[in-house]
Amino acid sequence: SSFSSLFPERAVLVFLFALLSALVTGYILLKNRANRLISVICFLINPLNRMARPFLKRDVIGPDRAKRIVEELLRDLDLFLARPFQTLEAVLVSGLSYLVNIALLYFSFYVFGYLPNLPLLILGLTASSVLVLLSFFPEAPGVMEVSLVTVFVSLGFPAHVSLFAVLLYRLVSYWLPLPLRIFIYLD
Image (cartoon, rainbow, N blue to C red; front, top):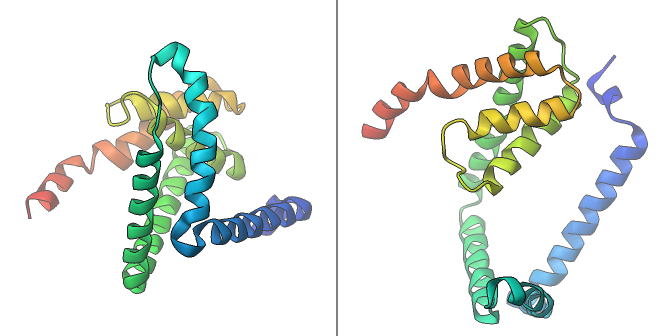
């Protein structure tokens, strides 16, 4: 079977419609130096601050901070648009890195005699990466490993295979190249 047979036609159409809707909404909100986006954020800040006051005794975010965040976003967007080839190169290298990580993780499971479902593997790696970014210690050693094992076990992968496959994956993808990265950093 081909790779396209892994995804149902209806799911692909829903995804494309959602992507198109997000792009149109983003365009409308970012038009005119994002004045509409700032208005929407300021409208949403008030209920958020009211909900947080009993717990934090202060506002979570103020309108001036929201405006500053949007201005930084626009400045970054202008930088990306000023250098389209470097932006495209960065996106392609990032995508290639993600594909390499998926392949390494797939073969880590394969080494232990388990053939993982590829869409679940991609979902697990992506969900785990988001969880690591949201954790209290995103750069701490072991956080990614625990997150990967937890996500894969919750997706139905065998626990013992998930543990050893994730440890092998992290050994090959992170810990073994670490000494080489130091030399690249010093260069």
